[in-house]
Each structure stands twice: as C-alpha cells, then as structure tokens.
Image (tube, rainbow, N blue to C red):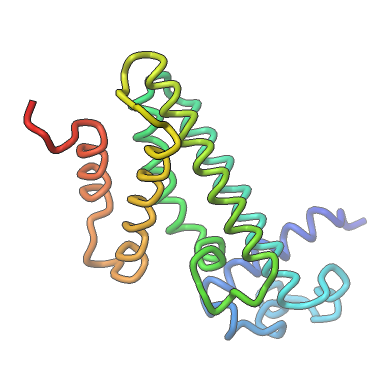
Amino acid sequence: MVNKEEFRKKIIITSGQVFSRYGFRKTTMEEISKGLKMGKSSVYYYFKGKEDIFEAVVLYEANVLRNELTKAIKSVESPVGKMRNYVFVRMKSFEKLSNYYNAIFDTHLDHFDFIEQVREKYDREELAILRLILYDGARKKVFNVKNSEYTALAIQTTLKGLEVPLFWKKREINLEERLNAILDVLFNGILMK
C-alpha cells in the first residue's frame, strides 16, 4: 500500500529539482514524470497540472525556510547571535530554495494568484521575525532601537538589495564577506564613537 502523503511529497521534492534545473516555463509534465520515473497519469492523479505542482513546491520550500530560520534563531540566546543567524541562514537558504526564491522575485510569474499571496505572507513573516529580534535586543539593552517597525523594514530592504547580486552573479560574490559587512554596519553603524 502506497502512502499517499509520502508519495505526494516525493512528487513535490522531485518536481522542485526539475523546476530548479529548467525554470518554471521550460519545465514540462513530461520532464516531471521522467524525473519521478513514472507515467504522467500517475502525477495527474495527485496534481491538476504543472501550475498546481509548482504551487505545492513553492509552499513546501517556504515551509523549509521557515523551519530553518526558526531553528537558527532558537539555537542562540543573544540578540546579536539571533540576528546574525537569521541573516546568514536566510541568505544561504535562498540559494538552496530556488523555486521559492523565483516565486517571490520573478515578475514573469506574476499571473499566478498564489504568488502574490506567498510574497505578501513572506514579507509579513520576515518583518515580524525581525521586529521580534529587535524588540528582544532592545529589552535586553543590547540594541538601541527607537522604532522597531522602521528598523525591521530597513534591515529587510538591505537584505533584499543583496539578493540581486547574490543570484545574478553567483561566482563573483563572497556571500560571507558581504553579510559580515552588512552586520558590521547594522551592529556598529558608520559613525566614529
């Protein structure tokens, strides 16, 4: 007896690899079923079509990212450690979760209603996490934050600005150095003290 949920998860994971290789537009149901080593009709039993599978892949990767970020934040006590872990895990996860990344940032996918919902949810969740880290740091007298909402938005904007060169010029960027430079400015500012 085949466990339907396990089999559905296998389709999602394998399809995610196929979408990563070819991109959404060039991926066909033929390639997905070939990657699974099964007939297309078996895939259609679980999903209506390519768009339905892509949505499941994006939501699966979003959940993976959420779990990795939660684990990274909870693994340390200090607010500085939490922020550092959040930034590093976020940026490194995006590299692995290319379908989720593409869903959030590829304007060619705008015609899917679920994409806009994923983008909005991602932005809201990220701002909430950043505000929580900032609030915790201010409460512990580690961060000097006058407005956690604006500070969280500024950090989010900075991280989004780094995503473009990270994904377009993979070989030319030293991710670790850039992230450390951002964190250095974040934690120490640019003013002489």
